Image 1: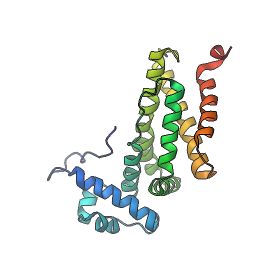
Image 2: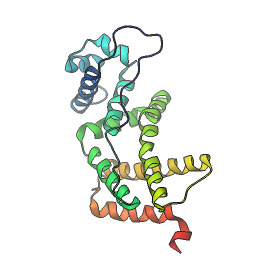
Image 3: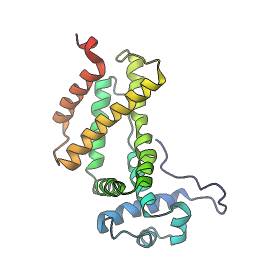
Image 4: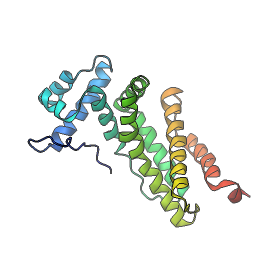
Length: 211
């Protein structure tokens, strides 16, 4: 699991950061966001809920946007991909777990809030990309490596092409599931996931494998 915690900025001194305090702050941020919404959420409210001084928050995060992104990132960092024995089973497992996560009120509210706010904030978009999107591509990389080791997918010698393929697979899976769960508000159940996985597997194997 990739840690959701941030290292202190270079040059800052003082007591070491407390993992327990970080976890309490991020949890308080998610709770406050569900209850208050983005517009009413303040650093003061988060500090009161977490039981820490407001200065403690500002030593870790420059403002609300950065704090909420890290609160979302911590949720997604909990996603794991155990070896289910086949690429198809791996995809079905992680899609169902992703959908379960999106059903949690704190995940839905936080993700929708930061995505909406990022349409007006380029720096926030960059932070979402580095803290959430790029980190979660680890699941695609792991799944492809396992599938290649099993002989289910071909190896790609070109690193640039391999990276582009990873990006595309992530976009297809994450984009489709987020759209269905949060935009269309349709169920992401086992039947839908099986149909989606079959479609994705056809594309991953390519025309030569289907022939």
